[in-house]
Amino acid sequence: MVTREIAQLKKEKKDTVSKINEMQGINNRIKEIDEKIREYKSKINEIMLSIPNIPSEMTPVGKDENDNPVLRVVGEPREFTFTPKPHWEIGEALDILDFERGAKIAGQGFTVYKGMGAKLERALINFMLDVHTDQGYLEVFPPVLINEKAMTGTGQLPKFKDDMYVCSADGYYLAPTAEVPVTNLFMDEYMENLPVFLTAYTACFRREAGKHGQDTRGIIRQHQFNKVELVKFVKPETSYEELEKLTLDAEEILKLLKIPYRVVSLCTGDLGFSAAKTYDIEVWVPAQKKYREISSCSNFENFQARRANIRFRTPEGPQFVHTLNGSGLAVGRTVVAILENYQREDGSVEIPEVLRPYLGGAKEISKI
Image 1: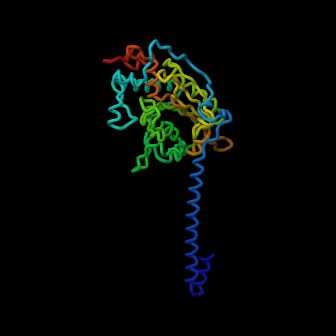
Image 2 (image 1 turned 90 degrees about the vertical axis):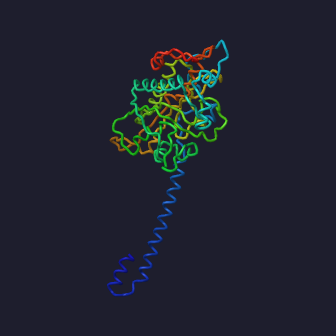
Image 3 (image 1 turned 30 degrees about the horizontal axis):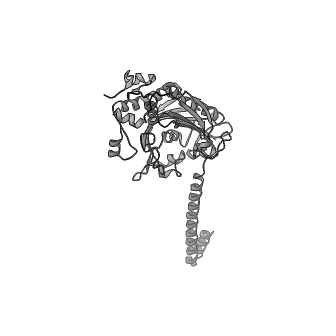
């Protein structure tokens, strides 16, 4: 409107200064309003990204881990004729775990695997990947340096920023789990062929902020650890059936290793930020005389897919996929379970039969 008025004034050879000033004032005001809108949109987005997923109706209601119902117990804890040692004592005595040198080169929460310890870690990774590919998962080997958009897509950011290692010069984050890069493989895409099942091994990195004093000895809680992950992309109507199958696929590792474990269903008070329903697989740790988590298997429904914009086409229009994942398994904690459950009174450790082909036929780990 003002532009037309200025054009008319010029045509009539009249003064246009006041109108030009008026137009500049309007432009400046528009810029101010646009900036405010961007600021409010950013704040709204930040608030929305901080809202957790809605628990499934199938998730039990409870306050904390004490309210998690046990669904099944598989295998009987071994009856020892001697007092079982903790894994760190076994590992140091066999010279396969070096905590002192790990701390020297990196700090507390880092471990050097040596000799048969390193071979056992590598054997477990290959064994787990072989089992899961036989179950129908496609193996992928993704980057472990992740950008902010991908970390936001799976729900790690912004809530868990303090738990992440960040390369501030480049804006990359070290992956806390293979879930992040593998799920984001399909970020901003339409998936044409569902379901898709993927498995991946990666090193994982966590600061474990606020957890000082927990599991300070041994390799149960580390800043750097290896993990094999299972990730599924499925249609909404099959996601809970697929959660049951994924959990059984992860359990198969412990069944083949013949290590006792149990499965619990996380209650609402213990549920993770992004999950709608979660099963924890907990392995028996003899020295602690209790079960410890070795895998979490979760259905996120469309929570991650909305954040990462992962969709599929239907006759009714685009829909968000459902994503699921679970550890298959945490490798270091599996080492813990083997060392403690298969230890002998003389200090040696029997190698589970299913792992022997991966270790050149070796039947035990003993002091050289």
